[in-house]
Length: 354
Image (cartoon, rainbow, N blue to C red; front, side, top):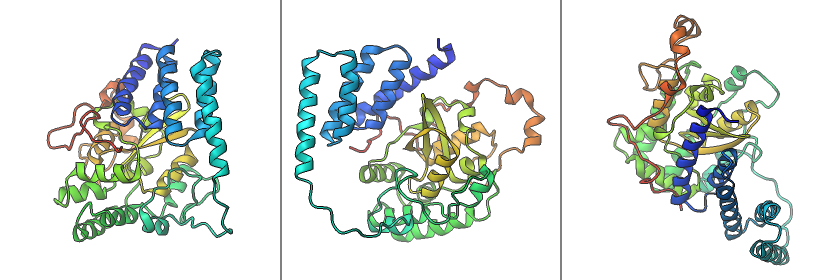
């Protein structure tokens, strides 16, 4: 039996991701999250409908293995459904055709696992930690603080090149702001807020926020979350050390079963994403979010009076001196509507990647 607070959180997750799926009907990640959320609340008919939609989308995207798994799950609930049986037969036929038409495998060649150099070719994202092991990341088991200290690259060089190559912002401004971000982030203490390249470009008038975010989403097919409208438990944010959340603007914001949803201000931060995978034993779903929304969540989570880059979170002694604040309801950390002057884009109005 779910606690009332957990039910409320799941209902909010459902409301948010129903809007996201409606705006981007091929977002399989969000469909998976919705299906799990429906099941947790016992909404079996909605879960089956979402599973059917997910299987259909898998077929449209030529993800035949995933489609078969989803149809098999449906068949457990409706073993005699002729539509499901027909769909599975069609998928099997298309899988067979795909295998027959597959071109011969070319001669083996080394795979470029260096993310910074690979990103210079076409700006492609590294989606998971298993895709590559970029230079600068120490793989043996270490403490979180030691692991964060090994992250020598923050992904801003790759992001800058992507923005210039895709003409999302003027090269002169991107170059200038990249240098500014490097200076701000150089030597950050673990409890200090890092600077965002996207935020700096917007603040200097190089481009508006929606243009940059839409440009990234359209070209990378990355998922987006309007974090400023999401109710967030600060304990979820604190699942990662401050040196990653504050320095690299990476924010865990929701958990659904064994899936942890994380927002980032820079989807090109390959080493940060790898560190998260090493630290957390969850399936990670990554989402792009507005830097201002991330600053707001971090400010509320760590009680920062100043949410500009370089601001510091209260140390452990200061936090211990204020037990009442620490035990305040999690709702105190909720991120409500965007503050005045904050670029706030809700899921219904934001043009998500098609």
